Length: 203
Image (cartoon, rainbow, N blue to C red; front, top):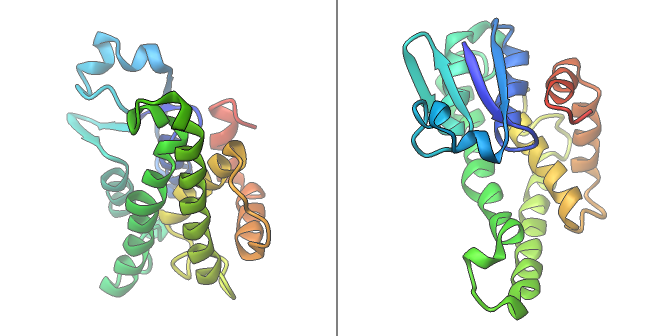
């Protein structure tokens, strides 16, 4: 099994999930140039990460890859205890990060995609930071009395952790979100998380 990742991108969350799964894997860290090179475009014509290659099977899209890793090593518990209810709970919070929280950062990362007037880019980014803050408040309420988003450690947690790193790097107001801060601290003490961060030059 081989993961193609870009340092600090959402693919880093998949890297962490692979560490948690205990499955043997290798990883290749790409940059903006190598993601558009012919060798990688032959794997993913979209030129985007993550991409996972398992034998002849090639899989893209973060949420799909997370589910595949969890299902291929169920004893790791990344989708819960095997019950439909726990898998649904883990998937609910993976979907929250993938469908709600991650897209909310896009105007911060690339305001020009949303509005051509450079003079309004700061306003677009500010509005996006407000939206991210509101979603972080949702997560903070969810984490009240819990260590993990789903109530147990799951594939949602590495992805959420990466959004916390993005929030820190883009000036999102995270003040007063004590449950989120405690979650971030737990993740940063985790051996698998640290192994992935080191491999991607982030620790």
